[in-house]
Length: 233
Ligand SMILES: O=C(O)CCC(=O)C(=O)O
Image 1 (cartoon, rainbow, N blue to C red):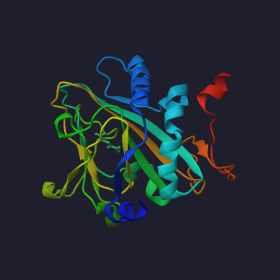
Image 2: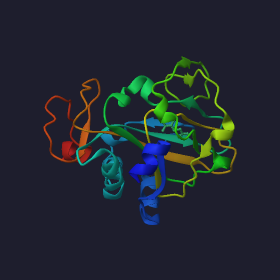
Image 3: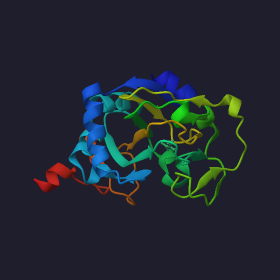
Protein backbone atom coordinates (compact mmCIF):
# COMPACT_ATOMS: atom_id res chain seq x y z
CA UNK A 1 0.00 0.00 0.00
CA UNK A 2 2.77 2.45 0.94
CA UNK A 3 4.52 2.03 -2.45
CA UNK A 4 1.39 2.94 -4.40
CA UNK A 5 0.67 5.84 -2.02
CA UNK A 6 4.18 7.25 -2.37
CA UNK A 7 4.11 6.97 -6.14
CA UNK A 8 0.52 8.05 -6.84
CA UNK A 9 -0.38 10.17 -3.80
CA UNK A 10 -3.51 8.07 -3.33
CA UNK A 11 -4.43 4.48 -2.62
CA UNK A 12 -7.90 2.98 -3.24
CA UNK A 13 -10.23 1.15 -3.00
CA UNK A 14 -9.82 -0.08 0.58
CA UNK A 15 -12.83 -1.94 2.02
CA UNK A 16 -13.43 -0.70 5.58
CA UNK A 17 -17.18 -1.00 6.33
CA UNK A 18 -19.68 -3.84 6.00
CA UNK A 19 -23.02 -3.18 4.29
CA UNK A 20 -24.68 -3.12 7.73
CA UNK A 21 -22.21 -0.50 8.99
CA UNK A 22 -22.74 1.65 5.88
CA UNK A 23 -26.52 1.53 6.50
CA UNK A 24 -26.03 2.45 10.16
CA UNK A 25 -23.64 5.37 9.55
CA UNK A 26 -25.67 6.67 6.63
CA UNK A 27 -28.86 6.47 8.70
CA UNK A 28 -27.23 8.51 11.49
CA UNK A 29 -25.91 11.04 9.01
CA UNK A 30 -29.31 11.49 7.33
CA UNK A 31 -30.75 12.43 10.76
CA UNK A 32 -28.40 15.41 11.06
CA UNK A 33 -28.08 16.48 7.40
CA UNK A 34 -30.58 19.28 6.91
CA UNK A 35 -32.41 19.49 3.57
CA UNK A 36 -30.02 20.92 0.97
CA UNK A 37 -26.95 20.72 3.24
CA UNK A 38 -23.87 20.09 1.12
CA UNK A 39 -21.22 20.22 3.80
CA UNK A 40 -21.16 19.14 7.46
CA UNK A 41 -18.08 19.90 9.53
CA UNK A 42 -16.52 18.28 12.61
CA UNK A 43 -19.29 15.78 13.36
CA UNK A 44 -16.85 13.63 15.39
CA UNK A 45 -16.71 16.33 18.08
CA UNK A 46 -20.44 16.03 18.78
CA UNK A 47 -21.84 12.70 17.63
CA UNK A 48 -20.73 9.36 19.13
CA UNK A 49 -21.48 7.56 15.84
CA UNK A 50 -19.15 9.94 13.95
CA UNK A 51 -16.45 9.32 16.57
CA UNK A 52 -16.94 5.58 16.03
CA UNK A 53 -16.42 6.10 12.31
CA UNK A 54 -13.27 8.26 12.64
CA UNK A 55 -11.83 5.66 15.04
CA UNK A 56 -12.98 2.57 13.14
CA UNK A 57 -10.37 -0.18 13.45
CA UNK A 58 -10.19 -0.96 9.73
CA UNK A 59 -9.82 2.72 8.85
CA UNK A 60 -7.05 3.14 11.43
CA UNK A 61 -5.24 -0.05 10.35
CA UNK A 62 -4.90 1.35 6.82
CA UNK A 63 -3.95 4.81 8.09
CA UNK A 64 -1.34 3.27 10.42
CA UNK A 65 0.33 1.56 7.46
CA UNK A 66 1.00 5.03 6.00
CA UNK A 67 1.67 7.34 8.97
CA UNK A 68 2.45 4.98 11.86
CA UNK A 69 0.67 3.99 15.10
CA UNK A 70 0.28 7.42 16.76
CA UNK A 71 -2.91 8.67 15.13
CA UNK A 72 -4.90 11.85 15.83
CA UNK A 73 -7.94 13.25 14.07
CA UNK A 74 -7.36 16.85 12.98
CA UNK A 75 -10.72 17.30 11.30
CA UNK A 76 -13.72 15.66 9.75
CA UNK A 77 -16.17 16.80 7.13
CA UNK A 78 -18.90 15.34 4.99
CA UNK A 79 -19.46 16.39 1.41
CA UNK A 80 -23.07 15.52 0.73
CA UNK A 81 -24.03 16.05 -2.91
CA UNK A 82 -27.81 15.79 -3.31
CA UNK A 83 -29.20 14.37 -6.56
CA UNK A 84 -28.84 16.74 -9.53
CA UNK A 85 -26.89 19.28 -7.52
CA UNK A 86 -24.44 21.79 -9.01
CA UNK A 87 -22.02 21.58 -6.05
CA UNK A 88 -18.46 20.75 -7.06
CA UNK A 89 -14.90 20.93 -5.72
CA UNK A 90 -12.42 22.91 -7.82
CA UNK A 91 -8.93 21.49 -8.42
CA UNK A 92 -7.00 22.10 -5.22
CA UNK A 93 -4.53 20.76 -2.68
CA UNK A 94 -5.66 20.34 0.94
CA UNK A 95 -2.33 21.67 2.21
CA UNK A 96 -2.95 25.27 1.09
CA UNK A 97 -4.69 26.33 4.30
CA UNK A 98 -4.27 23.35 6.59
CA UNK A 99 -0.49 23.06 6.94
CA UNK A 100 -0.82 19.26 6.73
CA UNK A 101 2.20 19.15 4.39
CA UNK A 102 4.35 20.23 7.36
CA UNK A 103 3.67 17.07 9.33
CA UNK A 104 2.85 13.39 8.69
CA UNK A 105 -0.79 13.37 7.62
CA UNK A 106 -3.29 11.65 5.38
CA UNK A 107 -6.93 12.16 4.35
CA UNK A 108 -9.44 9.32 4.35
CA UNK A 109 -12.44 9.60 2.02
CA UNK A 110 -15.03 7.02 3.12
CA UNK A 111 -17.90 6.34 0.71
CA UNK A 112 -21.36 6.07 2.33
CA UNK A 113 -22.93 5.78 -1.15
CA UNK A 114 -21.47 4.61 -4.40
CA UNK A 115 -19.09 7.30 -5.70
CA UNK A 116 -18.63 7.35 -9.46
CA UNK A 117 -18.42 9.83 -12.36
CA UNK A 118 -22.21 10.19 -12.71
CA UNK A 119 -22.63 11.42 -9.13
CA UNK A 120 -19.47 13.51 -8.97
CA UNK A 121 -16.86 11.24 -7.42
CA UNK A 122 -13.53 12.69 -6.33
CA UNK A 123 -11.01 13.04 -9.18
CA UNK A 124 -7.26 13.18 -8.67
CA UNK A 125 -4.14 13.85 -10.70
CA UNK A 126 -1.78 11.06 -9.61
CA UNK A 127 1.77 12.06 -8.78
CA UNK A 128 1.02 15.78 -8.24
CA UNK A 129 1.71 15.38 -4.49
CA UNK A 130 5.40 15.44 -5.43
CA UNK A 131 5.17 19.01 -6.80
CA UNK A 132 5.06 20.72 -3.39
CA UNK A 133 2.49 23.36 -2.48
CA UNK A 134 1.19 25.06 -5.64
CA UNK A 135 -0.32 28.53 -6.20
CA UNK A 136 -4.06 28.86 -5.65
CA UNK A 137 -6.60 31.64 -6.19
CA UNK A 138 -9.70 32.23 -4.10
CA UNK A 139 -12.84 32.29 -6.22
CA UNK A 140 -16.40 33.21 -5.27
CA UNK A 141 -18.86 30.61 -6.47
CA UNK A 142 -21.92 29.51 -4.46
CA UNK A 143 -21.59 26.03 -5.96
CA UNK A 144 -18.04 25.56 -4.79
CA UNK A 145 -17.73 23.07 -1.92
CA UNK A 146 -14.21 24.18 -0.93
CA UNK A 147 -14.60 26.34 2.15
CA UNK A 148 -12.38 29.24 1.08
CA UNK A 149 -12.99 28.96 -2.66
CA UNK A 150 -9.44 27.79 -3.23
CA UNK A 151 -8.69 26.87 -6.84
CA UNK A 152 -5.40 25.79 -8.33
CA UNK A 153 -3.94 28.58 -10.48
CA UNK A 154 -2.33 26.34 -13.10
CA UNK A 155 -4.38 24.52 -15.72
CA UNK A 156 -4.89 20.80 -15.27
CA UNK A 157 -4.57 18.38 -18.16
CA UNK A 158 -7.85 16.57 -17.55
CA UNK A 159 -6.66 13.58 -19.56
CA UNK A 160 -4.28 12.87 -16.66
CA UNK A 161 -7.10 12.84 -14.07
CA UNK A 162 -8.33 9.60 -12.51
CA UNK A 163 -11.84 8.99 -11.15
CA UNK A 164 -11.76 7.66 -7.59
CA UNK A 165 -14.60 5.17 -8.02
CA UNK A 166 -15.70 3.64 -4.71
CA UNK A 167 -18.49 1.31 -3.60
CA UNK A 168 -20.33 2.07 -0.36
CA UNK A 169 -18.03 1.08 2.52
CA UNK A 170 -14.82 1.56 0.53
CA UNK A 171 -12.26 4.27 1.24
CA UNK A 172 -9.42 6.10 -0.44
CA UNK A 173 -6.41 7.61 1.34
CA UNK A 174 -4.88 10.70 -0.26
CA UNK A 175 -1.85 12.90 0.34
CA UNK A 176 -2.41 16.52 1.35
CA UNK A 177 -0.49 17.83 -1.69
CA UNK A 178 -2.38 15.69 -4.20
CA UNK A 179 -4.31 17.82 -6.71
CA UNK A 180 -7.97 16.78 -6.59
CA UNK A 181 -11.51 18.02 -7.17
CA UNK A 182 -14.93 16.76 -8.21
CA UNK A 183 -17.75 17.48 -10.65
CA UNK A 184 -21.47 18.08 -9.91
CA UNK A 185 -23.81 15.20 -9.17
CA UNK A 186 -25.87 14.55 -12.30
CA UNK A 187 -27.45 11.35 -10.98
CA UNK A 188 -30.78 10.58 -9.29
CA UNK A 189 -29.21 9.67 -5.94
CA UNK A 190 -27.03 11.47 -3.40
CA UNK A 191 -23.24 11.10 -3.23
CA UNK A 192 -21.90 11.06 0.32
CA UNK A 193 -18.24 11.19 1.28
CA UNK A 194 -17.22 11.13 4.97
CA UNK A 195 -13.73 12.63 5.11
CA UNK A 196 -11.25 12.36 7.99
CA UNK A 197 -7.98 14.28 8.27
CA UNK A 198 -5.41 12.30 10.23
CA UNK A 199 -2.15 13.60 11.72
CA UNK A 200 0.28 12.23 14.32
CA UNK A 201 1.83 13.33 17.61
CA UNK A 202 4.53 15.06 15.51
CA UNK A 203 2.05 17.81 14.66
CA UNK A 204 2.84 21.15 16.31
CA UNK A 205 -0.37 22.91 15.32
CA UNK A 206 -2.30 24.19 18.36
CA UNK A 207 -4.80 26.17 16.27
CA UNK A 208 -7.27 23.29 16.11
CA UNK A 209 -8.18 20.69 18.74
CA UNK A 210 -7.12 17.13 17.85
CA UNK A 211 -8.59 13.83 19.03
CA UNK A 212 -6.44 10.80 19.76
CA UNK A 213 -7.77 7.64 18.12
CA UNK A 214 -4.73 5.32 18.39
CA UNK A 215 -1.44 5.32 20.33
CA UNK A 216 -0.32 6.85 23.60
CA UNK A 217 2.57 9.21 22.81
CA UNK A 218 2.96 12.47 24.71
CA UNK A 219 0.64 15.05 23.16
CA UNK A 220 0.90 17.74 25.85
CA UNK A 221 2.09 20.21 23.18
CA UNK A 222 -1.27 19.86 21.38
CA UNK A 223 -4.87 20.71 22.27
CA UNK A 224 -6.22 17.20 22.86
CA UNK A 225 -9.99 16.89 23.00
CA UNK A 226 -12.03 13.98 24.38
CA UNK A 227 -14.45 11.92 22.24
CA UNK A 228 -18.10 12.97 22.53
CA UNK A 229 -19.40 9.84 24.28
CA UNK A 230 -16.88 10.21 27.10
CA UNK A 231 -17.67 13.92 27.54
CA UNK A 232 -21.35 13.24 27.90
CA UNK A 233 -20.97 10.13 30.10
O1 LIG B 1 -15.68 15.02 -1.96
C1 LIG B 1 -15.31 15.76 -2.87
O2 LIG B 1 -15.99 15.93 -3.87
C2 LIG B 1 -14.01 16.51 -2.76
C3 LIG B 1 -13.18 16.01 -1.62
C4 LIG B 1 -12.10 16.94 -1.21
O3 LIG B 1 -11.88 17.98 -1.76
C5 LIG B 1 -11.25 16.55 -0.10
O4 LIG B 1 -11.41 15.47 0.47
O5 LIG B 1 -10.37 17.34 0.25
